[in-house]
Length: 314
Ligand code: NDP
Image 1 (cartoon, helix red, strand yellow):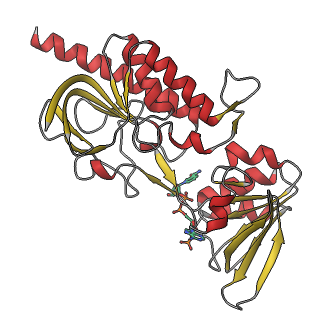
Image 2: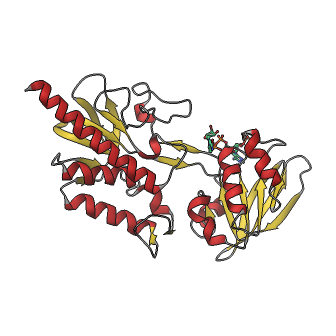
Image 3: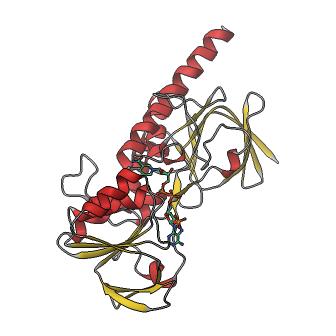
């Protein structure tokens, strides 16, 4: 197994990772960034991004991530295609294994592995992904202004996104698989009070229907067995996210859903020299701009940590 030493290892290539790369490389720390299996992260599966400041005419998600990458490379971030398959934070320097074959010794690690939306797993959902099917109402709701949409899920995210969509769309169908919702009482009340949200209880999604664009969703009542087609132009999935943090389990403090815990107001984890940024530690905001901001925090925290370490040794 080959072995290499780096000052800053960045794991992940979404807005958080690339922003950490921009800051760390400008600080002269020669960061090495491993992209993970989906270079560019979740934004590469969205279309227009219209809420990222600085792009007044909007930008395509994949293009934006190419721009982020170029900016990180411009200052010397070394970007490598590869997966971090294991880490060992039990001793210092910190250790990471890449694709089970390369061992890296890092003086600091910035985790920007993101999260992945959970999907229902039906073929039509994949077929229309980015073309009427979305897992982010805040990102894509605007495209359905004045139209009819459906959203599946019954947690706080689904309730919050249904409320958000109700302000844009003509009508919102909320597809809830049980006869009650998991969301907090106040969020449920908000949904129930919205005049243009209709909750379909005991309802499961069978297929998203359409030719080039979404035209309807076929749903089934799991009590009566009855199926029907609900005409909609947009279909949102809000059944939760999973942070990509499995390789850190047992080493970093996490909440019960696997989000890495950081010291509030910082990117510091329970391990010195390990910083967590972006959606891997944030289940609340989950926006490109907040992830980028937190990537910046990770790089600044790493820079200060390394400077303090150097002082100790001097
Ligand atoms: P949750 O795990 O809380 O909820 C997921 C929802 O999706 C559940 O209602 C679940 O149904 C439903 N679901 C799961 N799989 C399917 C499926 N295959 N078909 C249909 N429905 C399905 O995820 P959230 O993202 O809503 O929330 C995650 C965490 O973040 C929670 O702790 C939440 O409280 C928090 N949060 C807080 C917010 C706030 O305070 N403003 C905003 C957003 C999130 P079922 O209930 O039947 O299992």
